[in-house]
Every structure is written in C-alpha cells, then in structure tokens.
Image (tube, rainbow, N blue to C red; front, top):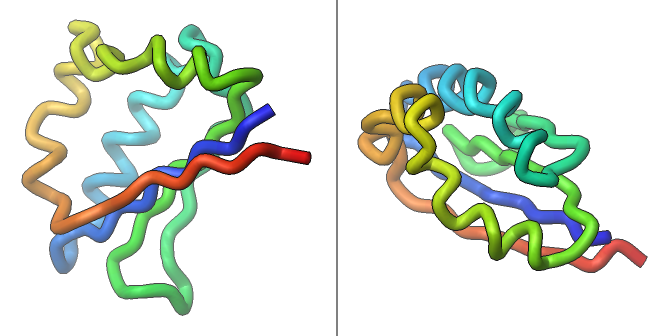
Length: 96
C-alpha cells in the first residue's frame, strides 16, 4: 500500500476555491483505485496550503490515472484550477 500526498500552495485567498473543486472531483477518484482520500488545509503550516492525500494498493494505480483530469466530468469541475495555485509538490510513501 502507498500513500500519495499532493501538496498545493494556493494564491492568497484561493484555498476555499481549490478545496471546493477537489471535493467535487473526489467521488470520481474512487473509480480509479484511490482509497481513503482526504483533504487537509493548513493550521500552522505555510499559509494557503491544501493537501490531498490518498492511498493506493500499488503504484500502477497512480500511473494509470495520468489522464484523470481529462475525463469530461472532471475536466469541467477542475477547469482553471491551476490559476488558483502558486506552487506544489507530490510525496509518495510506502506504508509499512
């Protein structure tokens, strides 16, 4: 099992907009093999931080979701989401 953590630093004041988009897209993630997905926002981390964290059985699940945001229903939800983000990174951990 692996934990995939996507860390986003939004532009000032855009955190709620990004969270809203992610919450709308999350139901579609279950179809792709992502498990236990959750959203977190900063309390004492860097300002305007949003983390989307999911578990996957193996890394092939992650590799096979490269076109996830191209799905028509997800594409509409996530339209212009990159305009909300300043920077970000991904962390992948093996759950022991």
